[in-house]
Amino acid sequence: MKEHLSIELLERYINGECTDAEAALVKQWYQSFDHDAGYTSTLNAAQQKVLEEKIYNSILDHIDAVDDEEIPVVNKRNTWLWIGSVAAVLLVAIILGLYRRASKDNKDTFTDNQQEIVVITNNSHRIYKSRLPDSTTVWLNPNAQLKYPKVFAASARMVSMSGECFFEVTKNPARPFIISSHSIITKVWGTSFRVRDNDKSSEADVAVVTGKVSVSIKTKQSINNTQLNIVSGDVMLYPHQKAVYSAHDHTLKPIIKSDERALKIWNHENLLFDNKLMKDIVPALNARYKTHIIVVNEKLNHYMLNADFTGFNLPDVLEALNKSLSIDYEIKNNTIELK
Image (tube, rainbow, N blue to C red; front, top):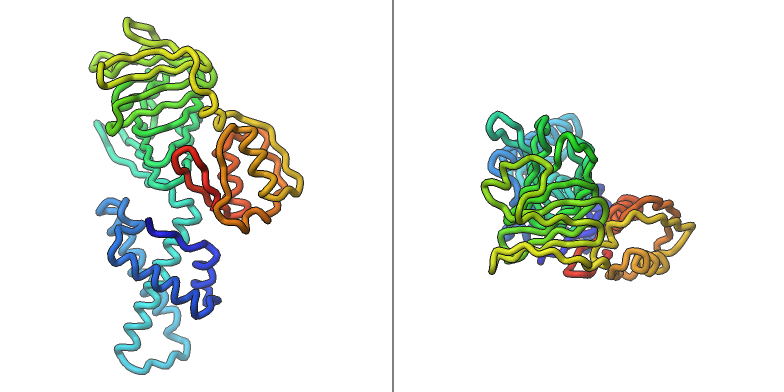
């Protein structure tokens, strides 16, 4: 996988503060995209066209901006080399902008049956947080996708998803919150839970942290049933319980005691760090959230933090570290790597 350059290096390159060696590294990285899908590969044709026009117009703006300056133009070939370098810097600036948005989501809307549908796809290696129109919060793991109407219907709040998502649903018994995924239907009676389901796995599961949910195997009847009622075959889940669907025998089975360690990262904890080094903060996070965080970049251990993480779950803590100290992270299996 192509390694990302640091935000600091890209900023120095744009500001003309790089050493010759650093500039060569950025140029080598930029040229490597000729044979790679790159950051724009997730955009559709219309979005790529818009981006192309923005880059072109920005180049023209840069050219117009320097018309009144004294620039020695040696020949036509050098002029085009200069324009090319402007394009390269603009591309780096655009990529830097994507970094600052965490390179996380590809958010799009389309019309389906006179209804605007919002699609969020997490194409990054981090967890992406989204807030729905009813104030429900959803965290999308890498490669997860969520679809929901821009305006929820009066009868029910219907969403669809693929991958792994964690939901904290705003209570509203009059408008049930119903999640449709590849194999199962999840009806929300309570608040927070995890759903894992996609077309590449032979299993799907729902694990509850707080409140209660009911789970059913996805059928034409279950999709159309928007009422909060229990029918034959449904599984009702309470805190610390889990239901697992198996595609091999088309069964949905409850597990009375789920693996709580994997769900600890979603607990809202109260953490206070008063001028603590990252080398001391990481063990505290591992102990509190029962997870495995490691520091890949040794210099991060010497970063100092003064922060109040009252009521934060682990993804919110990681996002705060990213915004305050520019610490990136990547999820690899059951390990979180800080970079």
